[in-house]
Amino acid sequence: MEKLTRKYGLVTAICMVVGTVIGSGVFFKAQNVLNATGGNMPLGIAAWVITGLLMIICSAQFAVMATKYEKVNGLVDYAEATCGKGYAYIIAWFMVNIYYPGMTSVLAWVSARYFGVLFGWDMTGPEVLALSGFFLIASFAMNALSPKIAGKFQVSATVIKLIPITLMAIVGTIVGFASGTLTDNFNTVVSEAVGGTSGGLFAAIVATVFAYEGWIVATSINSELKNPKKNLPLALLIGSIIVVSAYVLYYIGVAGGASNAVLMEEGATTAFRNIFGNVGGALLNICIVVSCLGTLNGLMVGATRGMYAIAARDEGPNPKMFSQIDKATNMTTNSSVWGLFICAVWLVYFYGANLTSGWFGIFNFDSSELPIVTIYALYIPIFIVWMKKEKDMGIVKRFVLPAASIIACGFMVFAAIYAHGITPYLTAKANGTFSFPVLFYFIVFIVIMAIGMILKNPRKKNAVNEE
Image (cartoon, rainbow, N blue to C red; front, side, top):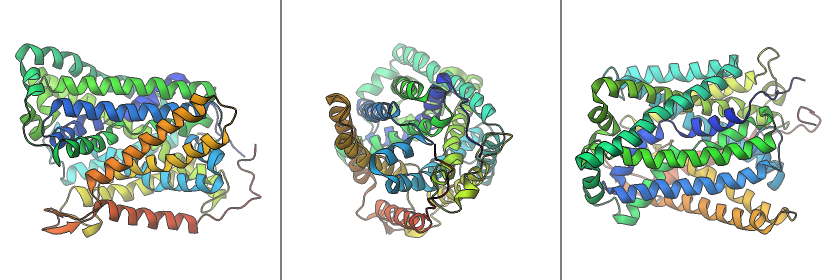
């Protein structure tokens, strides 16, 4: 039986963390943060810092786990080692059928959206939708046909995506202070934050969650990583710190390019044009497209390996088929096909639910944020059992860090419910009807997970993962 080989080093792993996290979110969610806070810059910065700290806390806990557990697919390995095979299957099924495809589909659209800006395309038009599908297939093809090229692209895209962020952070801050725009933005609030100061902060935090998410994808390649018990923890911690620093500095730099009111209305693209001119803005926009494609590639890495992580444990539908590895490419081919298919399904959902008048009626919800918050809820049992089982660990690693991680995850769940609402609210999109976004997302979640339990079908004699 073919096995995945150790083909990635520390640099690739760090770039997986930085490259998967830094992508579209920092560019298009910055506008969401401003709108949620009513243009309150200090409140927006607080949201970026708080979410970043929560990410660092959780990644530090997983970094400790990475020094102890290493099997096929990081997060699934940790769930199995702590909570058992049943919970590991739940995590794996959720990741492959909701989490990865939900985020990957959004990244395909965002990549197409920023590409369309160069040609003046409507972001909800057919051109952007068609290009979204192309980017999705192209990313799949690169990962399925040549994982090594996909790894090199990840490194290159990470370097390129830091160009617009670094330039805006430095030049935008200098220009903003010189013109007084930055000072004005810090001292001016455009409007009352949604739901007041606390409501605006929670809404902004949930918006930044999408921008920060993706770091856990790096754990999906631990069976392909050289010296994973050393390199994976380093990649998680170093990558997380780089991301938080880049986001906060970029957000401040953007505020130097235009007033809060303009940024709330037109987004960061206007700030780029104001500071770097039309040509410079267009070149930086191309860098943003590459940045988004790099994130798309990183997420596709996880999506293409999802069913393999399940089949390698002799579970799920047809383990023999999904555990196959291509001899020529050393890639999980059949698992990749399923990943592409389910990503396409979620792309159609995202477009219909969030970019139209609402194709799915009461079941319209934000598939770019709610699945991310769900994964934080699913982390909690892993951390609790870790504290019970790992008696050989010191006080900090056994109790302090996982307890802090539990608090961080609980806070994220609360913020999501508070911001999106489980109680009904009137939505203009649905022509004056009521919507329950969190509730109906939860229903969809339960249905998909129930299907997974029906298809679990373990076969104990399969030795794919016996080592």
